[in-house]
Length: 611
Image (cartoon, rainbow, N blue to C red):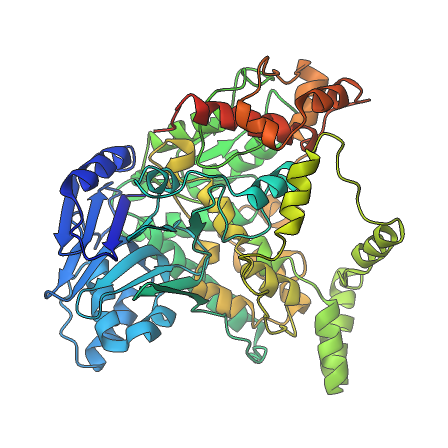
């Protein structure tokens, strides 16, 4: 959550200190606890520090190792002691009190680019090698921390804050038309390396970049391994390993002192809370934890707070239910988020974050618990069938049916394929009438230009859907929108279920029985959570909030009287208004994409920032 920026001048000129000071000022909303600048010939860095109570953090950057390596970024390691032990075995004298940034530099001089595959945690950073004039940037596997980069005449720069790069002289302020087209049609861009700005790119989760001699190389540095399924002799061994790994993931993410916890009425966040309570109790610091439940009342009926309260009472955690007093969203705010967003409850979300941040600048979430543990059984059945493992089929599938009174759901994707076939038979989707024709033709003509080659992932025999999802960058996009650059709230989200060590274990689980309806979590949390929570089925949100706002609150979008001039390059405004007026029934999120873009462009036009 601290802010950082780095620039390398490819024309050999020194980086101006005045520029770094201006950028540091723009970053101050991220880090009120200290600002530092550093220059090294044709490279310059600035850093603003947010104190989250995280041990082994560094409040002064860039961090230097001799005169050769300079580092700026956010780094928080999981399994820190294991990494230090490996470095010591390799001959490095790493002090016990070394910061995570210093440990990272030791890893870099020991293994070079191979060090990235050994890193586990939340990080985004840039390392400048002054001797070889090479910049290396990397972003962790799940994308917990953002990283953007841009190139202009004689400069290359990087930051964890998109708005900052836009303000750098020499970086083009043109919009990326492919991004805009995707947003107007789908609400998001399909290419997770693009940003709304043509000259600024997003480093995808699990990727690194190397910039040297004017050449840029972006590549993935980590694929989760595909290994043989685990075959423990006793069921208890699966449970013990899961509890140990989840406990480590939670403990590594707990700051010193206070910590907030998201607690829904479900199983994933409750499991994280249970492990946090256990870890804090062992440290005699249980008062430092506080659980928060986001309630959708009075917008709609919501039983989650009721179940969450029972979990909090069971664990002995202080608990707050966060809810709004009104069932309708406020007027659309004119504020420039880093990129356009379709969120009519953005102000509500921001106020909730502020309440959670009032207790601690760090919050643990249950994000990621569904990736593997709500898995498919069809791929596993195919895997065993091909191997002729009839005994395993009988033990797993017939045994599950005998224990639960039903066959495990296959989740083979048959319905989705059938729907896709019918869509193809119906012909291609029609473009909306309000999409500017010249703009549409222009983007189609550019199709493929500047695109990265489609990534070819190996097929996971047991968990193909989860494996693809974990490598898709989905969680990076989710966590980016919880970043201070989007919320303007100093609150850092950490997700133990996205711990790489835990994910590697889960991907080796036999899907039946362990991943069917989260069987593993339900059994592992026996005696650690209330019985009613362990037995409760997954409960999705009862209704779409946008639908409820219209039905109960009579909400209607506030239309701009005069759209921003830039919008006319993409949308035929009068045509969109006519479409809106002729809409029968309730508005959908897709109906609002042009309006969301209009408000965002208006904020940019009026120079209304989020900081």
